[in-house]
Image 1 (cartoon, rainbow, N blue to C red):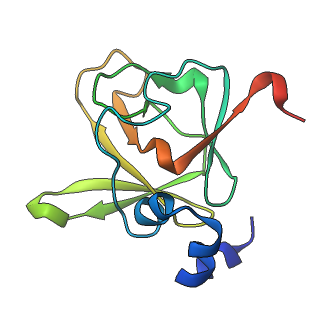
Image 2 (image 1 turned 60 degrees about the horizontal axis):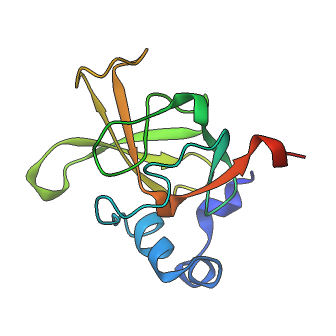
Length: 137
């Protein structure tokens, strides 16, 4: 992906994203807990950024966390960037698509999940598309 996806105007983003996608990806919103289409989804394949199509996560790193959003213990190397988020009077680690800067959610460490990284990437379903292993080119 070229860096040009990071420099799109709000108008350009609004033209390609739904209002919900724009609110979450470009305005750092969140979907209500338990409402996302991928929270309990069990398909085998790759989760991509809805804004630019970059592969972000594989189904092999998805796990049931019970948090109300899709959870992954690791991203595809280089696909996700981390940023300090001090909104709402707390300190969290925001995760964004490295290619387009779209907000994905937050990452939490040390919660005791039985995963290789002891991390939980809590991702909005609205930020993702899914490509089934059987449908890859």
